[in-house]
Length: 77
Image (tube, one colour):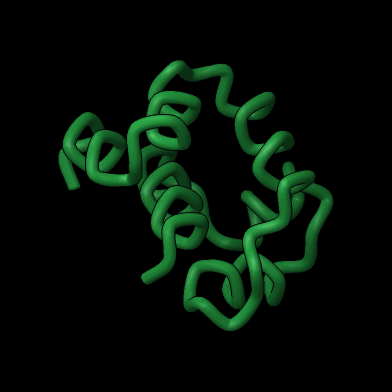
């Protein structure tokens, strides 16, 4: 799993959201969320910015700066 896909999947799981719910909040299709999570689509900087604003959680920004391992540890993944 790619960096972006891992961040998106971990955050979505942490929130207990379906791909459809996250897609709605990010103004994406469910298919786009699935493709990002499964490394079939690049994780766009605009999507990343939306995810950070949506989450309003320092763990997301931390994971971007320090790597996905930090996020997964904080979220218990």
